[in-house]
Length: 384
Image (cartoon, rainbow, N blue to C red; front, side, top):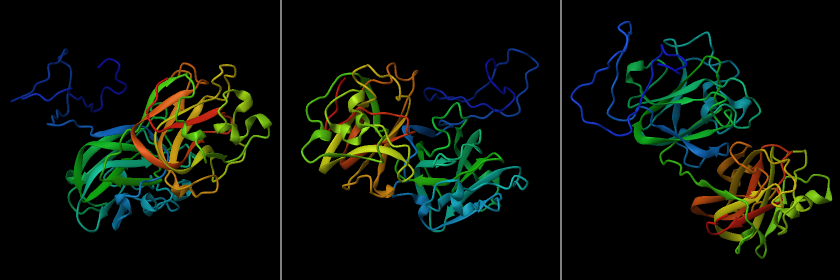
């Protein structure tokens, strides 16, 4: 198996389409080849699909993990109990970690069962530290499993079915510490779920949902200029921010002043607000939103302060810099890098797959060095 990192381990292959068969065989090129087990499935083995651009952010209100559950684990670190996986809190102070010296049947896992009945599962979300403060204890993979029966840490492995295996190598995942959302290709009905991890791992929250998450964000292009119907400049709209860099050229009113360029841009203050750096626009009333555009300098003069992450959020309330984090809903996160975007400093256009109703929008920046010259919002899809 040329190019395979660990050729001795079990490997999973998927067919692009289903085939009828009465038997299967494997033909070996060498007579010295050995196989320990040959498995075949009628549906794709890996059912979990990462929802593009949707990482970080807050849990959705229909999180099944917050119903009446009974948690269990192979073991728990003294300061990181199993109840932390569904306690509504993100961060290192509210994570579960196994006691690496006490595996159960050689495995470290955490999960919960619903006390009353089974539930359909269409999506899950989990991460190491959604506050992005701790970047250690990320496992090589998460193995997500479910069962139809009541379950505890003593439930035999034979009754557990694998939903999917999530590779989480730091070079493979965007922002591997943050909460990531996965849709199930085929919904399953479960009485309990669990996640198997490495011994030196941590999970801050395990979320379960009946409905899958739509892939809302779609990159359309870069460059171009203002178009008719920019909601950020509508009557009654006003800009707000976590704070402003101490320079007249980089104040938050520039976010919607209708002028591109460094002299009319916004840079956040070095101090966070609610733990974040953000800039946004309140419309003054609810509007339908279908597209965003922003850049570092659309005049093509300044090319610094562009590389980083930009999380797009909205609120149905008249939210601003003083509003609690609970009112903000995450649409997704765009990572601007030299390889993913040919001109990172230019205006970038993001269309949504569906319209949303919003009274306020904001962009949360990955760090305080980033700069935005104009934030545009439209009620229709736009072109470059």
